[in-house]
Image 1 (cartoon, rainbow, N blue to C red):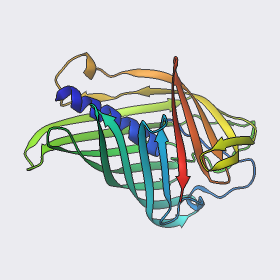
Image 2 (cartoon, one colour):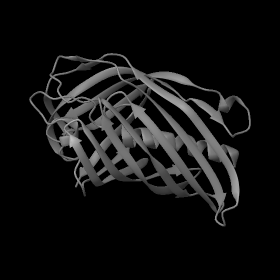
Image 3 (spheres, helix red, strand yellow):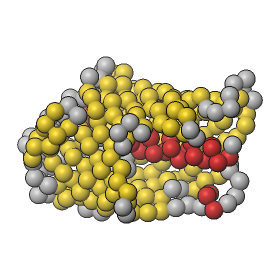
Image 4 (cartoon, rainbow, N blue to C red):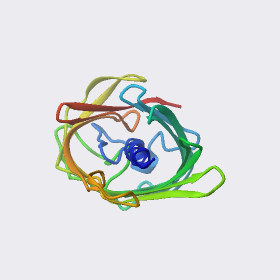
Length: 263
């Protein structure tokens, strides 16, 4: 059970990183474009659907409500759905999230509920902050520019109960972090996406991540904080106001996250 819970928590951390794209997404534009809070996808009833490594993991983000204060200050109420294979079965979950944007900084917080193995229920609360913007971390960027580094951190709490509410375990991850080096914007070019060929720019950089401090699980090597670096290429497409594809390379392993549809 403990190994399963830790695997579950790790997978959820990965899903939230993909959903928020907090670990691997950068943005830019080759011409004048809207500020973040005027992004074409950030309007009520828009749904972004995506996947990781084909259909290994899938996610969707529904924009329910947007409170716009200015072009660079807004709050959005979201519903996040995700599913992934965990311990031999497909686990699905859903939950409400709040995206807050102000002063060049964004936060994503909320909870995610799912049914687990062995007749259990899992509630995960997530708080993530980024010095930049989720999905599109820059308002005005030109090809050939070098963007400033970004950094962020996340806290994740996983509570496991039986269906009747009896608590089983709680695992906490505090201060999982990401930081990047300078981000280089490539030239505007045709790029095949799931919604057709678009004019996009590759944004490349090195990202360093730390798994944070784990508590609530038995001690062991699997609980130690781990850090690593990855090479990231994000394909930002100004027409959609989104990074439509992100490729993360760690050694010989590549992970590819894509936006499959915008409705």
